[in-house]
Image: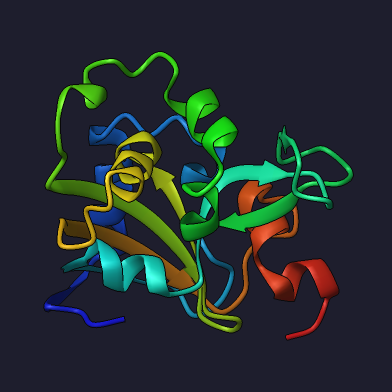
Amino acid sequence: MLIRQQRLLPIDEWRQRVRDQGCRTISGRYLPLEGGEACEYTCTAGDFFAGNTYLVRYTTADGTSLVPYNHPDATPILIRDFVRNAAFVQEILQRRDRLKRGPVISADLLVQRCSSCDRHVVIDDVHRVVWIGVQGGLAAVLRVSELAGSRWPEDMPDMKVVCTCLRTGKR
């Protein structure tokens, strides 16, 4: 991922951003158990989508339906694959008419990353980043506040599905 600017953040500042942005994702309350480090950076949507970047939305193992994180079959889906599925996009954007009025050229994202398996999960501003992907706005500027860690709690809803370390028990 080509990062334009990066600045380390105190973890308390990252937690404050979670509160300030009104992040409703349960995982926003979790901190890594090891290797915790927060930073902020900017990059293009194209660079961001090219990485191992997932949403806090999950599919069945066969990829045909969306399911919650606690579904026994929950499977992570990359943003770039999610935006190619019109039914998934419709479901997530159905009540977001203000987004559909025109192009979106930027977003402020909250992201958590497992630094062991290098998987990112967008925990806030999901609708906006999906709309950017649907519109093909690969040049859109993303301002990312990221919390990384090498080990996450086993009961953490989203990392439990996205992180290969937690799913397989391998570190």
